[in-house]
Image (tube, rainbow, N blue to C red; front, side, top):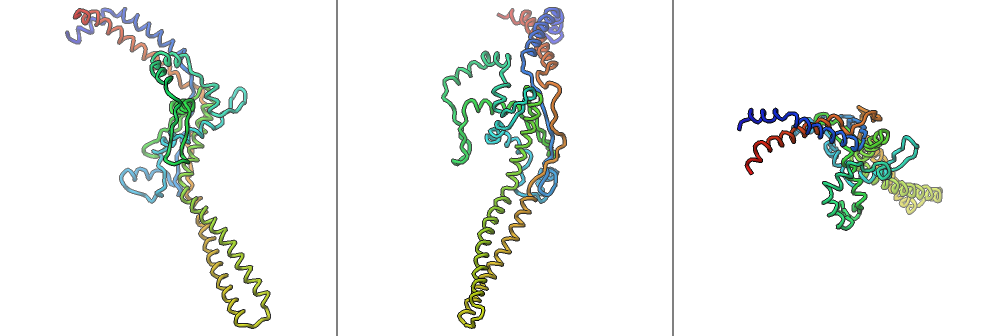
Length: 343
């Protein structure tokens, strides 16, 4: 049995294979009709470093060379990890989505609950292929997921919340270019205006997380210095007032004791003033450092409202079903011709 003979056998039954392909073509049409409709919005940004430098330094980093970037720099390759984190998803689920038809504003959580209903195809797959998993989950208790290792970072996630977070995993994507660090954000929903808002919300929250991470050290230092400065300012004003009052009370008194006390107060004043001035300078430097470390995002491609559906991919689905039909038809012909005779 050689390849040429197999091809001849298949070609002799081409009408049958064509009929099988036609059946699968009809199945493909049905799948297209019952598949959920989605619109995808995207945006492309370039994160800039604290010095206004783009992530071209990432090329040097690949070669083991550091171009003077801060140790607190968050590389774009880690952005998908932020997207997959529980705090990010919880904040995103609370973000607003405005309905274009009614003008009503819902949270993303409410939008998914109200508008992102399972399609007919989803329900068919759920109660056919997914039935074993559905039965197993029905006997499980309400899950609690713990994230973090301290009491401040523990999240209790209900089964419903977990489903919505899984929905975000399937409908939001961040693609990071390996050379220049371009970050592409894609978001899909059943309504075009809603998908554009979701992509915009992802970009805003992601920027907030990146900024918080980048300036955390400088901001903590600024808060510490500001608290210390406020305390020192009170002490300085107190010493200054004591010195002024002592001078007023002892203007015309000539005494060694008075002069010694005056010298002590003057020394305290000078020391307090020096410390106050130094803290004021350090506070100004820390304020400048916070502004310096704050990253900037250059938008290459802004979010736009999609005009064409991203799903279902009709042509791809139809071609796939026709191809499967040809394979199934050919396999059946060969089975009838050769394999069946062996049993």
